Image 1 (cartoon, rainbow, N blue to C red):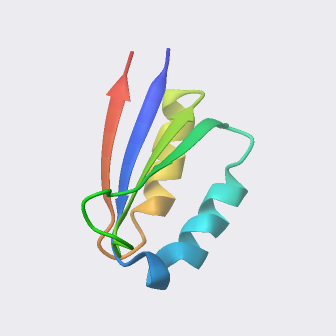
Image 2: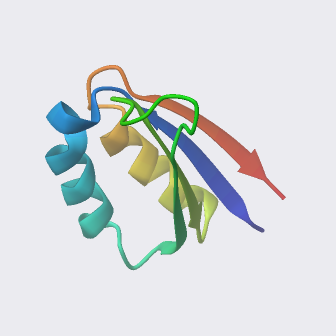
Image 3: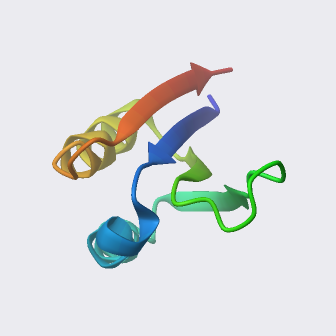
Length: 79
């Protein structure tokens, strides 16, 4: 099973440290991380990140912690 978590991180400057701490905590379960820049807006304050994680249980645990960040949006794809 492949699980991709899509994350929209509002106000990158304010939330980046907390976001990075959570990703570091879960680094052993993250197989891939891709950051997407909004090319239509130079230096956008919002960020989009895609993560591939190893299992449904790991995805749930990671998502719970990420949702503690104010304004964050998550979507999940399962293949």
